[in-house]
Length: 82
Image (cartoon, rainbow, N blue to C red):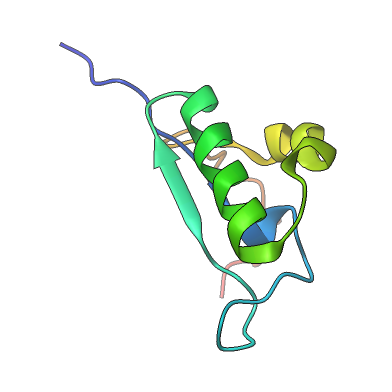
C-alpha cells in the first residue's frame, strides 16, 4: 500500500528577511500529510514568531509548499556537480 505524500515548507522559502531567536535566517520547517495542514501550521508560526499576518502571504506560501520525493534530478549542466 502506498504511503501518503508528505508536504512541506520552510519559513525562509517565503520570508527571506525573517530571523530566528538567535538572529539567524529562520529555518523553521513544517511537514504534514496535506497542503491545508501545512498552511495552517506555517500560518501559526508566521503570526506568532514573525508577527506577520499570514493572510497577506497566503499565495506566496502556497507557491512555496513542496511535495516530498518530487525533486527533479539531472537539471544541472554537465560538470555542474561539485
